[in-house]
Amino acid sequence: MTAQIALLADGRLHLQHGPIECLCRAWGAAEEVRRAYAQAVAAFPAILPALCEELSLLRRELPTLPPRGAVARAMHTACMPYADRRVTPMAAVAGAVADHLLAALVAGRTLARAFVNDGGDIAFHLAPEETLCCGLVADLAAPALDGTFLLDARHPARGIATSGRACKGEGGRSFSFGIADAVTVLAGSAAAADAAATVIGNEVDLPGHPAILRRPACDIDPDSDLGARAVTWRVGPLSAAAIAAALDAGGLVADALCRAGRIEGAVLALGGAIRVCGLSCPALEVR
Image 1 (cartoon, rainbow, N blue to C red):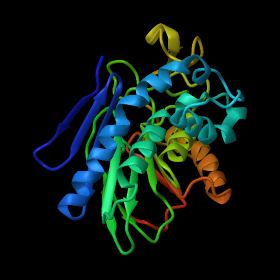
Image 2: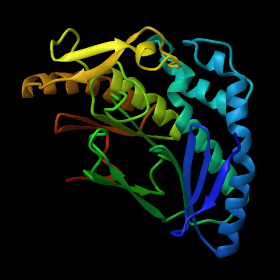
Image 3: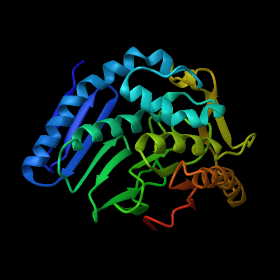
Image 4: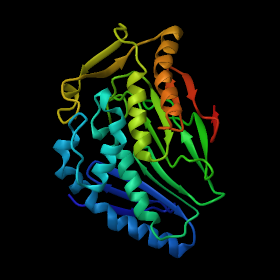
């Protein structure tokens, strides 16, 4: 299995290696962009083999010994604040990969803007006075543009990530213990946003509700790092009161993480309802 690399007609760089698939974009002088892309291409092929070398460690519940590889260490660091919530470093894998590639892409380069999008978890670079518009998808099972974030260089966030319930055939590529359609988080890095989105998404829940069907993660995906733990498989119709209660539960955690400075804000979505936590800036427009 070799890394696949392609420059798309719209100027984005497409990188794929096994389960890792990233879209990169940079804006600036043509030569600076060319060199930036070359740097990302050079860094990309080593990421998956390095993660595979430490996969058994990365699939263990925290706390664990720190791994050796740069991306693996970033995953471990992002998830350690949530060690009491039974997460593994895999909760931050996509965000950590995006951060790593963005760092390679911008190193020594003069760029106005840049981003690396790893399956919806995005690390971005903004020069002073620059902005970047990012879409909000409130339901991963039925993707549509439900709003936009205006990411501003003056804001401390440099990563945005989305998590939510995801089942084979029902959207997404990861599992959740909660029932949120989507939880989108802004944080200082994509890895930090990825870990926090997972944790908040797990808390948007209605334990024991008859409309919620759960299954062991290993029955759905034998390779899941969650083993036999029960994850959300299907959510039936919920009343407005039940939706509000689930969003309240997740919102308590999101608000606490905002106050602690671990995240810059979050948007929680379930059943057509949306809860915004801590996002006075950047500008958020929900349709």
